Image (cartoon, rainbow, N blue to C red):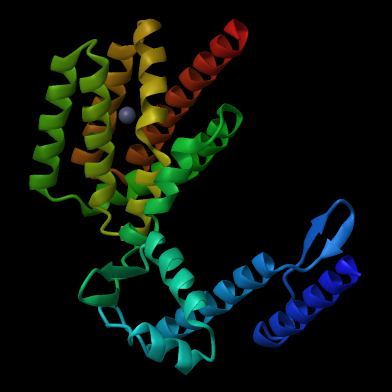
Length: 273
Ligand SMILES: [Zn+2]
């Protein structure tokens, strides 16, 4: 009887969710049997609240910087529970879509790519070894094009700044920490001059610290640091000459070197393990 009662309760929940979620039902599979539980229901309500807030932002009803109505009002407006709205706000806050200012209110952020794509960097830092090579492949697709574009857009001041970073890099010789720092600065400075914030955020996210650290560790151990620093010089000269194709080609060669060292480091690690 108890189990019959539970089954009845869960099916009631699934009806509620089915209505609130426009026909979509939250279900979990337990031991081969399909169950619809309160947990699934609250997740579906959160999804609905997320979708509604997102569409308010997309439609311009809530533009960047706008303050959201207080939670009870928002819940009533959307026809959803306050807890669903509260959960949705938490999710959107961690995705940098909303900014919750305690004691003030909840605001839509600037929605700038640099904010919204921040999660990419976090995700890349958590990727496992076998997927790091995929990340390198994506960089190989994007970075040469970005560097080529930079050749057309860099100002003399940008080039001077880049020249300074190159000198710092040469002075750092075998100091891995400094090399990683200057390498990051070098490529960021180049890509930043494209003025394409989405591209900048993507490449920053794909070139995380952990990945760079592994490549540079391999380079230093393999006595290839000097040669790699000179690859930056080649990129720099192509940019100075405002030669788009040459800048693109030299960046491609450079990403290829990084990828080769990453392969070496990963292979050595799997041989050790
Ligand atoms: Zn580099």
